[in-house]
Image 1 (cartoon, rainbow, N blue to C red):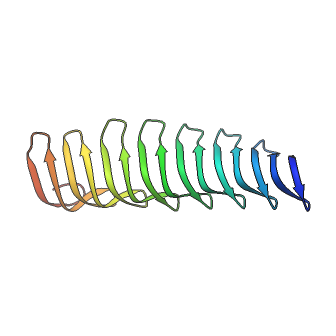
Image 2 (cartoon, helix red, strand yellow):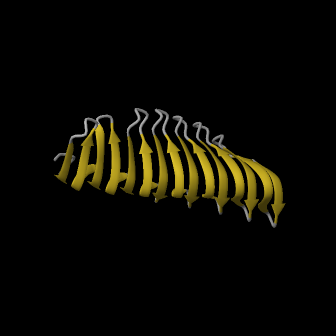
Image 3 (cartoon, rainbow, N blue to C red):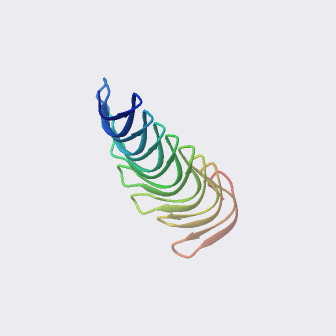
Length: 171
């Protein structure tokens, strides 16, 4: 069911659509597409509010997932793309770059327990150079597929230091 403006038999301007499954969209339309600013609510509790282009999330927007996680940032063709912040229900937070819906580029991930990683990401894994602050010390160096791998330095809280090669997270 659509309530709103029409132009040449297509939804145009501001309006509201309710689909048979109960999903709703309230916002702007252009040429029959969700286009401009709007809010889409799924029956499963998920909700997106932000920019749309030709029926897809595109531009800045906020997605609130049914499990309590929230993403606020840039979108391109229904995928997280550009800069954004993803906050999990457990308190973990990632702030940084996304490509193809994954953490890619540079970013900072902070765990609820206070540990944090800041550096390079590839396909949502720590990969490239990064700094990880653990509860017992700090690692600065190379990462591969989420593990300390290559040249690096680990400095323990008691000031002991290891500098050298790491493999699969071990020295």
